[in-house]
Length: 354
Image (tube, rainbow, N blue to C red; front, side, top):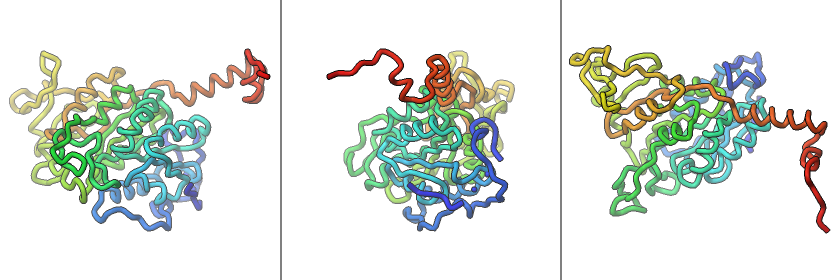
């Protein structure tokens, strides 16, 4: 377990129970003395710098922040954060984070995982953490490849992907992490990209202050085994036509001058249109706070090979698992008069054998 050497005003919701400090912090306070070891040019560097730069804004004590990771390139993250942390086991970071968050409401608990770690061996743990609405923030780095094990196709690799483990092309249809999270009824779901520092930090800030399960998919380049996976969204010559920035309460437009847009057809499907032809009043208004996730799910299906939405897909309030669990424990203690867990465990129908 990595440990901090030192400490801050909370945002709303998720951080209200986490102790603060008056110490003025900068990104430097969240950097450790460990050498950051990813491949030169890896998108993980940008994500790490983004997280370290925005955490001081939260004003939380560093000893009350925990980063838990699984296995993969992204899972080295806790070593580089001057907070508490755990480099755990493959795919199980959400399960470990669930135990920590439910037992320690004074902690800000983060999960750092990758597309292979979270969506293959860890898929079951991920969806249950999301559907339970545990108060954790999950950063899912998606480079659409297994990087640490040297370039096998992952659960998000495109159909037909040629890799060392699929020399004739992958036969698997990929997961869409945002669609998966919305299907699991996650209360906060967003997508951002490693190369846009401003957008990355704004999404992370919103995820951090959300009370409940937050999932942020981060498009991240692996320049060794899957270089250029997101060039359409990064190249200055193409990104305006490929990147849709979702803003709550605003018409969904994209293109260099906002000349393209998204509208709902009479058949209940989304389509791309020229704003000049249909008028802005015909465009779909993004509503991340709608109680039903259906429209957000439809937006998530606009895939990376065409115009692709980035931003907050969903942000709603729902009872948090941690709070509900603690309420049950308090109620059970009050009813039974038991003060200790062991008393509760032996207060019902129990018997000894032998």
